[in-house]
Image (cartoon, rainbow, N blue to C red; front, side):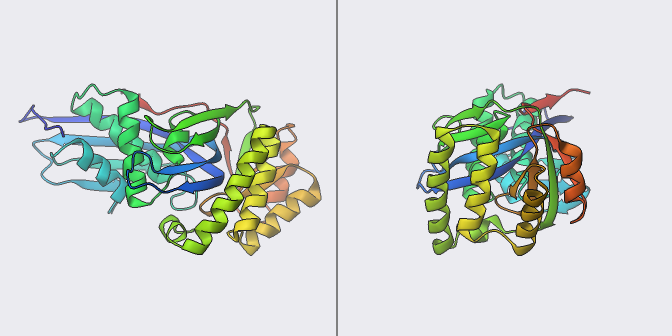
Amino acid sequence: MYEYENEGTDVSAKAYAPGHITGFFQIHEHEDPHHKGSTGCGIVLNGGVTTEVKVGESVDETEIFLNGKRVEGKTTRTVIDLITDVPVRVKSWAEIPVGCGFGASGAGAIGAAYSLNRALSLNQTAKNLTEYAHVAEVVNRSGLGDIAAQSNGGVVIRLRPGGSFFGSVDRIPAPEAQVFCIVLGEISTDAVLSDGATASKINAAGKAAMSELLEKPTLENFMLHAKDFASKTGLLSDRARDVIEAVEAANCGYASQAMLGDTIFAVNPDGQEFELYETLEEFGEVLEFGISTCVPKLIVE
Protein backbone atom coordinates (compact mmCIF):
# COMPACT_ATOMS: atom_id res chain seq x y z
CA MET A 1 0.00 0.00 0.00
CA TYR A 2 1.35 3.40 -1.00
CA GLU A 3 0.68 6.85 0.43
CA TYR A 4 1.01 10.21 -1.27
CA GLU A 5 3.87 12.24 0.15
CA ASN A 6 3.75 15.54 -1.77
CA GLU A 7 1.09 17.27 0.31
CA GLY A 8 -0.04 20.73 -0.69
CA THR A 9 -0.02 20.04 -4.43
CA ASP A 10 -2.17 18.22 -6.98
CA VAL A 11 -0.65 15.74 -9.38
CA SER A 12 -2.37 14.27 -12.43
CA ALA A 13 -1.46 11.48 -14.84
CA LYS A 14 -3.20 9.93 -17.83
CA ALA A 15 -3.01 6.54 -19.53
CA TYR A 16 -4.67 4.60 -22.32
CA ALA A 17 -5.61 0.92 -22.60
CA PRO A 18 -7.18 -0.85 -25.59
CA GLY A 19 -10.49 -2.67 -25.69
CA HIS A 20 -10.83 -6.42 -26.18
CA ILE A 21 -13.47 -8.76 -27.58
CA THR A 22 -13.48 -12.37 -26.39
CA GLY A 23 -14.63 -14.99 -28.89
CA PHE A 24 -14.62 -18.01 -26.59
CA PHE A 25 -13.35 -18.82 -23.12
CA GLN A 26 -13.17 -21.33 -20.29
CA ILE A 27 -13.65 -20.33 -16.66
CA HIS A 28 -10.93 -21.26 -14.17
CA GLU A 29 -12.02 -20.68 -10.58
CA HIS A 30 -9.41 -20.38 -7.83
CA GLU A 31 -9.52 -19.08 -4.25
CA ASP A 32 -6.45 -16.98 -5.02
CA PRO A 33 -7.43 -14.16 -7.44
CA HIS A 34 -3.88 -14.11 -8.81
CA HIS A 35 -4.51 -17.60 -10.22
CA LYS A 36 -8.18 -17.15 -11.08
CA GLY A 37 -9.15 -16.24 -14.61
CA SER A 38 -9.93 -17.74 -17.99
CA THR A 39 -8.35 -19.35 -20.99
CA GLY A 40 -9.62 -18.58 -24.47
CA CYS A 41 -9.06 -16.30 -27.43
CA GLY A 42 -10.02 -12.77 -28.43
CA ILE A 43 -9.15 -9.68 -30.43
CA VAL A 44 -7.56 -6.52 -29.00
CA LEU A 45 -9.02 -3.39 -30.61
CA ASN A 46 -7.50 -0.05 -31.59
CA GLY A 47 -10.26 1.69 -29.63
CA GLY A 48 -10.15 1.76 -25.85
CA VAL A 49 -10.39 3.83 -22.69
CA THR A 50 -8.36 6.88 -21.64
CA THR A 51 -8.11 7.34 -17.87
CA GLU A 52 -6.85 10.34 -15.91
CA VAL A 53 -6.23 10.34 -12.17
CA LYS A 54 -5.67 13.26 -9.84
CA VAL A 55 -4.30 13.09 -6.30
CA GLY A 56 -3.43 15.85 -3.84
CA GLU A 57 -4.80 18.58 -1.64
CA SER A 58 -7.96 19.30 -3.65
CA VAL A 59 -9.04 15.64 -3.73
CA ASP A 60 -10.71 14.76 -0.43
CA GLU A 61 -12.60 11.62 -1.48
CA THR A 62 -12.29 8.95 -4.15
CA GLU A 63 -14.59 9.69 -7.08
CA ILE A 64 -14.85 7.89 -10.40
CA PHE A 65 -16.33 9.40 -13.55
CA LEU A 66 -17.01 7.70 -16.87
CA ASN A 67 -17.74 9.84 -19.92
CA GLY A 68 -18.57 12.76 -17.64
CA LYS A 69 -20.95 10.89 -15.29
CA ARG A 70 -20.13 9.81 -11.76
CA VAL A 71 -20.19 6.00 -11.47
CA GLU A 72 -19.54 3.40 -8.80
CA GLY A 73 -16.69 1.93 -10.83
CA LYS A 74 -16.14 -1.12 -8.62
CA THR A 75 -13.24 -2.55 -10.60
CA THR A 76 -11.34 0.72 -10.85
CA ARG A 77 -12.07 1.45 -7.19
CA THR A 78 -10.55 -1.88 -6.23
CA VAL A 79 -7.41 -1.04 -8.22
CA ILE A 80 -7.12 2.19 -6.25
CA ASP A 81 -7.61 0.37 -2.93
CA LEU A 82 -4.90 -2.15 -3.84
CA ILE A 83 -2.39 0.59 -4.64
CA THR A 84 -2.98 3.49 -2.24
CA ASP A 85 -4.85 4.82 0.79
CA VAL A 86 -5.10 8.38 -0.54
CA PRO A 87 -8.26 9.76 -2.20
CA VAL A 88 -8.18 9.69 -6.00
CA ARG A 89 -10.32 11.44 -8.59
CA VAL A 90 -10.61 9.28 -11.71
CA LYS A 91 -11.98 10.45 -15.04
CA SER A 92 -12.29 7.93 -17.87
CA TRP A 93 -13.40 8.43 -21.46
CA ALA A 94 -14.43 5.34 -23.40
CA GLU A 95 -14.35 5.20 -27.18
CA ILE A 96 -15.77 1.70 -26.96
CA PRO A 97 -19.26 0.73 -25.73
CA VAL A 98 -19.55 -0.03 -22.02
CA GLY A 99 -21.16 -3.23 -20.74
CA CYS A 100 -21.38 -4.81 -24.18
CA GLY A 101 -18.39 -7.13 -24.38
CA PHE A 102 -15.62 -4.70 -25.32
CA GLY A 103 -13.53 -5.05 -22.15
CA ALA A 104 -14.18 -1.47 -21.02
CA SER A 105 -13.91 -2.26 -17.30
CA GLY A 106 -10.56 -3.94 -17.84
CA ALA A 107 -9.26 -1.05 -19.93
CA GLY A 108 -10.30 1.42 -17.25
CA ALA A 109 -8.67 -0.67 -14.53
CA ILE A 110 -5.36 -0.88 -16.38
CA GLY A 111 -5.46 2.83 -17.17
CA ALA A 112 -6.05 3.65 -13.51
CA ALA A 113 -3.12 1.48 -12.43
CA TYR A 114 -0.75 3.04 -14.96
CA SER A 115 -1.88 6.57 -14.12
CA LEU A 116 -1.57 6.06 -10.36
CA ASN A 117 1.89 4.62 -10.83
CA ARG A 118 2.90 7.85 -12.56
CA ALA A 119 1.05 10.28 -10.28
CA LEU A 120 2.34 8.71 -7.08
CA SER A 121 5.86 8.04 -8.45
CA LEU A 122 5.60 4.39 -7.44
CA ASN A 123 8.02 3.11 -10.09
CA GLN A 124 6.18 -0.18 -10.49
CA THR A 125 6.73 -2.41 -13.53
CA ALA A 126 4.07 -3.06 -16.15
CA LYS A 127 3.72 -6.61 -14.84
CA ASN A 128 2.92 -5.37 -11.33
CA LEU A 129 0.38 -2.85 -12.62
CA THR A 130 -1.28 -5.48 -14.80
CA GLU A 131 -1.55 -7.76 -11.79
CA TYR A 132 -3.46 -5.10 -9.80
CA ALA A 133 -5.93 -4.74 -12.67
CA HIS A 134 -6.38 -8.49 -13.08
CA VAL A 135 -7.09 -9.03 -9.39
CA ALA A 136 -9.59 -6.16 -9.40
CA GLU A 137 -11.41 -7.65 -12.41
CA VAL A 138 -11.78 -11.18 -11.07
CA VAL A 139 -12.68 -10.05 -7.54
CA ASN A 140 -15.53 -7.95 -8.93
CA ARG A 141 -16.45 -10.53 -11.59
CA SER A 142 -16.43 -7.84 -14.27
CA GLY A 143 -14.16 -10.03 -16.39
CA LEU A 144 -11.75 -12.94 -16.26
CA GLY A 145 -9.30 -12.66 -19.12
CA ASP A 146 -9.52 -9.20 -20.68
CA ILE A 147 -6.53 -7.85 -18.76
CA ALA A 148 -4.20 -10.57 -20.04
CA ALA A 149 -5.18 -9.82 -23.64
CA GLN A 150 -5.20 -6.03 -23.32
CA SER A 151 -1.70 -6.11 -21.88
CA ASN A 152 -0.33 -7.96 -24.92
CA GLY A 153 -2.26 -6.85 -28.02
CA GLY A 154 -3.21 -8.62 -31.24
CA VAL A 155 -5.33 -11.77 -31.51
CA VAL A 156 -4.46 -13.22 -28.12
CA ILE A 157 -4.69 -16.87 -27.10
CA ARG A 158 -4.87 -17.13 -23.31
CA LEU A 159 -3.20 -20.47 -22.61
CA ARG A 160 -3.05 -20.40 -18.82
CA PRO A 161 -5.35 -18.47 -16.46
CA GLY A 162 -4.29 -15.87 -13.95
CA GLY A 163 -2.60 -12.51 -13.73
CA SER A 164 0.64 -11.43 -15.32
CA PHE A 165 2.80 -13.52 -12.97
CA PHE A 166 0.92 -16.80 -13.46
CA GLY A 167 -0.99 -16.58 -16.73
CA SER A 168 0.44 -17.42 -20.15
CA VAL A 169 -0.51 -16.08 -23.58
CA ASP A 170 0.35 -16.53 -27.25
CA ARG A 171 -0.88 -14.81 -30.41
CA ILE A 172 -2.36 -15.68 -33.77
CA PRO A 173 -0.29 -13.99 -36.49
CA ALA A 174 -3.30 -12.25 -38.04
CA PRO A 175 -3.54 -9.79 -40.94
CA GLU A 176 -4.39 -6.13 -40.31
CA ALA A 177 -8.12 -6.70 -40.75
CA GLN A 178 -10.86 -4.31 -39.73
CA VAL A 179 -13.25 -5.43 -37.00
CA PHE A 180 -16.87 -4.38 -37.57
CA CYS A 181 -19.25 -4.40 -34.60
CA ILE A 182 -22.97 -3.94 -33.99
CA VAL A 183 -24.15 -3.46 -30.41
CA LEU A 184 -27.49 -5.20 -29.93
CA GLY A 185 -27.70 -4.98 -26.13
CA GLU A 186 -25.99 -5.67 -22.83
CA ILE A 187 -25.28 -8.87 -20.93
CA SER A 188 -24.30 -8.91 -17.24
CA THR A 189 -20.91 -10.59 -16.94
CA ASP A 190 -21.45 -11.23 -13.24
CA ALA A 191 -24.87 -12.83 -13.81
CA VAL A 192 -23.55 -15.21 -16.46
CA LEU A 193 -20.45 -16.21 -14.50
CA SER A 194 -22.57 -16.82 -11.38
CA ASP A 195 -24.94 -19.25 -13.13
CA GLY A 196 -23.68 -22.80 -12.55
CA ALA A 197 -25.46 -24.42 -15.50
CA THR A 198 -24.30 -21.77 -17.94
CA ALA A 199 -20.75 -21.95 -16.57
CA SER A 200 -20.68 -25.72 -17.23
CA LYS A 201 -21.73 -25.19 -20.85
CA ILE A 202 -19.13 -22.44 -21.22
CA ASN A 203 -16.35 -24.64 -19.90
CA ALA A 204 -17.21 -27.61 -22.10
CA ALA A 205 -17.54 -25.49 -25.24
CA GLY A 206 -14.50 -23.35 -24.38
CA LYS A 207 -12.25 -26.37 -23.86
CA ALA A 208 -13.32 -27.85 -27.21
CA ALA A 209 -12.86 -24.55 -29.04
CA MET A 210 -9.35 -24.08 -27.64
CA SER A 211 -8.32 -27.58 -28.68
CA GLU A 212 -9.57 -27.00 -32.23
CA LEU A 213 -7.98 -23.56 -32.48
CA LEU A 214 -4.53 -24.75 -31.39
CA GLU A 215 -4.56 -27.32 -34.20
CA LYS A 216 -4.99 -24.48 -36.70
CA PRO A 217 -4.31 -21.05 -35.13
CA THR A 218 -5.67 -18.71 -37.80
CA LEU A 219 -8.04 -15.75 -37.61
CA GLU A 220 -10.57 -17.59 -39.77
CA ASN A 221 -10.51 -20.67 -37.54
CA PHE A 222 -10.85 -18.50 -34.44
CA MET A 223 -13.97 -16.84 -35.85
CA LEU A 224 -15.55 -20.20 -36.78
CA HIS A 225 -15.02 -21.64 -33.31
CA ALA A 226 -16.16 -18.42 -31.64
CA LYS A 227 -19.48 -18.76 -33.50
CA ASP A 228 -19.81 -22.42 -32.49
CA PHE A 229 -19.04 -21.49 -28.88
CA ALA A 230 -21.75 -18.82 -28.78
CA SER A 231 -24.29 -21.29 -30.15
CA LYS A 232 -23.35 -24.25 -27.92
CA THR A 233 -23.41 -22.19 -24.70
CA GLY A 234 -26.88 -20.79 -25.34
CA LEU A 235 -25.51 -17.25 -25.11
CA LEU A 236 -26.24 -16.47 -28.76
CA SER A 237 -29.21 -14.12 -29.00
CA ASP A 238 -31.82 -14.43 -31.76
CA ARG A 239 -30.84 -11.10 -33.30
CA ALA A 240 -27.17 -12.01 -33.20
CA ARG A 241 -27.97 -15.28 -34.96
CA ASP A 242 -29.80 -13.37 -37.69
CA VAL A 243 -26.78 -11.13 -38.31
CA ILE A 244 -24.36 -14.06 -38.40
CA GLU A 245 -26.57 -15.94 -40.86
CA ALA A 246 -26.79 -12.86 -43.10
CA VAL A 247 -22.99 -12.59 -43.20
CA GLU A 248 -22.70 -16.28 -44.04
CA ALA A 249 -25.38 -16.04 -46.75
CA ALA A 250 -23.56 -13.11 -48.37
CA ASN A 251 -20.27 -15.03 -48.14
CA CYS A 252 -18.53 -11.79 -47.18
CA GLY A 253 -16.65 -12.72 -44.01
CA TYR A 254 -16.94 -14.24 -40.56
CA ALA A 255 -19.13 -13.11 -37.67
CA SER A 256 -19.75 -14.11 -34.07
CA GLN A 257 -21.03 -12.72 -30.78
CA ALA A 258 -18.74 -11.00 -28.27
CA MET A 259 -18.36 -12.65 -24.87
CA LEU A 260 -19.90 -11.43 -22.75
CA GLY A 261 -22.16 -9.01 -24.55
CA ASP A 262 -25.00 -8.96 -27.04
CA THR A 263 -22.64 -7.58 -29.65
CA ILE A 264 -21.75 -8.84 -33.10
CA PHE A 265 -18.14 -8.66 -34.30
CA ALA A 266 -17.16 -9.53 -37.82
CA VAL A 267 -14.02 -9.66 -39.97
CA ASN A 268 -12.99 -10.41 -43.52
CA PRO A 269 -9.31 -11.43 -43.49
CA ASP A 270 -9.23 -11.38 -47.29
CA GLY A 271 -9.78 -7.63 -47.44
CA GLN A 272 -13.31 -7.71 -48.95
CA GLU A 273 -14.59 -5.41 -46.24
CA PHE A 274 -17.02 -3.16 -48.13
CA GLU A 275 -19.54 -5.95 -48.76
CA LEU A 276 -19.26 -7.06 -45.14
CA TYR A 277 -19.96 -3.53 -43.94
CA GLU A 278 -22.98 -3.23 -46.25
CA THR A 279 -24.40 -6.52 -44.98
CA LEU A 280 -24.01 -5.50 -41.35
CA GLU A 281 -25.48 -2.02 -41.67
CA GLU A 282 -28.86 -3.57 -42.49
CA PHE A 283 -29.04 -4.51 -38.80
CA GLY A 284 -27.90 -1.29 -37.13
CA GLU A 285 -25.07 1.16 -36.62
CA VAL A 286 -21.74 -0.40 -37.53
CA LEU A 287 -18.74 0.47 -35.36
CA GLU A 288 -15.35 0.06 -37.00
CA PHE A 289 -12.11 -0.83 -35.25
CA GLY A 290 -8.82 -2.42 -36.23
CA ILE A 291 -6.95 -5.37 -34.75
CA SER A 292 -4.43 -3.64 -32.53
CA THR A 293 -1.01 -4.64 -31.29
CA CYS A 294 -1.21 -1.62 -28.97
CA VAL A 295 -0.54 -2.21 -25.28
CA PRO A 296 -1.38 0.08 -22.33
CA LYS A 297 0.63 3.29 -22.28
CA LEU A 298 1.05 6.58 -20.47
CA ILE A 299 -0.12 9.75 -22.20
CA VAL A 300 2.19 12.73 -21.76
CA GLU A 301 0.69 16.11 -22.62
